[in-house]
Length: 435
Ligand code: SF4
Ligand code: SF4
Image (cartoon, rainbow, N blue to C red; front, side, top):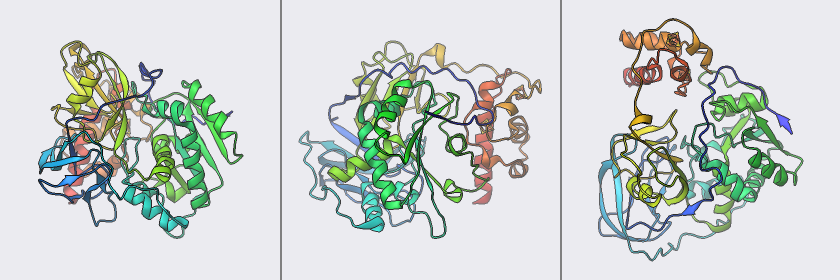
């Protein structure tokens, strides 16, 4: 088996993959879903339905004319109860379609296997599926798969590196649907005329490596590569370097160096969509953390509230102090159980007091461990000092926008400095200054 290169920096975070051997369990249809009109990077959608409308499974409930966007579909059949701003997992309010489910799960007439001839028609169909990057980024897939003229893509990378602690959603996709992954790869290889595919998986997942090696043996164009199990191996730039030795220059995209990266769940969805025509209406979500009674991988309809998902996993065994959407390194804290699962939700974690407590910050001892840990060659201690001193204009000179917010700096700091938190704030300030 091929072995990947080691990227610079990183952090040896614990794995805590308690749910890796747990088969996905399908959650029942909830009584209601709340579907925010923002489920991707790019322009939010406008609601395409109004209060009182009947909707069916797979029906479009949100669209946008903007280039970078993706339509949003109903995950249930029922009646639209409300269209109003509601709390989004990101902590702000966005227009949201609330649907009371009728339990019938009647499928909308538009849902049928797509008919397409060639790349352009396929991408149009894929746009209609609402697919966005399912690894957590949420970038619309039909755009990722449309490199502009002059950009020659010679490698398709499939990201099976799931490096955040606790999360096993991608791993379960490999173990349960490996043939879908290969068929999705074949579809994209043929349409985009790509002759080389590299599937990257870390060496702490021998089951997934073996499973994919078996199915990839059907093609001499597809290779499975074993990667060092080190956080953030699954981050796009680290993965590309580990698999190809190519580096994405600052401010550039993978397609600028001839690469497209897709998550295992996204590529698998493509195969399923081509077979059934069902748009993106459900997600596998790893539910774990010290306060969760039955850690599981749950297949959840998009729009299901966090409270219902935790309830499905046995509720809480002890008082909850912190809830995260995503992993402990990059996840976003939630402060309401009324927010809902969106397209890029891959984990919900709930922690008790002991695990939620944030250590007190000490003084910087200038040990340089944060610099050594930064996979983006940044100077986290300087960036955070600049933010503390509110000299935000200086941040660009220190390449603050290259920060991928992986948290390796904070994790490695012996003084427990809140480095990534202040760098995030600095990035926000720079964004605000530009707008
Ligand atoms: S790791 Fe922490 S203590 Fe060491 S230089 Fe960086 S900020 Fe300072
Ligand atoms: S500065 Fe940004 S990219 Fe570098 S380690 Fe910290 S969070 Fe990660």
